[in-house]
Image (cartoon, rainbow, N blue to C red; front, side, top):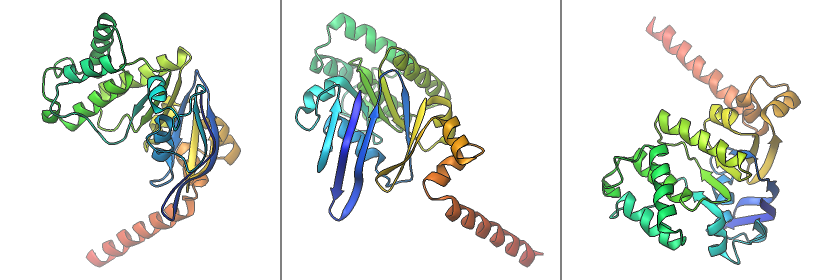
Length: 261
């Protein structure tokens, strides 16, 4: 289980996370949704102690990442939004290094890395220097690195960004398999169709707080919304703003058409 209790994080005068209390249970896939700057990435980085809360407590299966980040990282497979890798290594060398860090037996590591390379479409890239790989392939290496130790909790920030359709489909199924094995899966995305297709439950954040939570069908019914897009805009407080901007856009188009005519 991944749990946040009264968590607050400030950056100077900006409150990035504002008193969040929420739990993510084993066996389910959760999706964090929210506008840029709503606190999603900050919350996710707290799961491994990369960001420490100013107030409140984070717990990963009873481990506080702020007090024992090493233990937390053994439990959590964290993939940040930004690609951060040792670019002078090959994916194979990086995998070997991480296997030693996580103390994975050689035979088990070889089998696991081979499986992940096949799932992510990296088999032909394992011997190339990471710095020479395309953005999409470096993203895949980052995902492999986050999964190599077979974690109990997956925290994936925008994991589908930059992936080709084949890899995106297989990653989605891998997430479902992990959840079926009783693991906790938390990911973020800006693609609402992905959230609706993959997540058992969505959590919508706004200005550092949880603005809404539930299954997509429950939220739609509660708000009498047609789809997740409508739910997201309503709960995040963007509905009227987006509506006004769309109307202004079409008014500008109509005005331009009249001038051209």
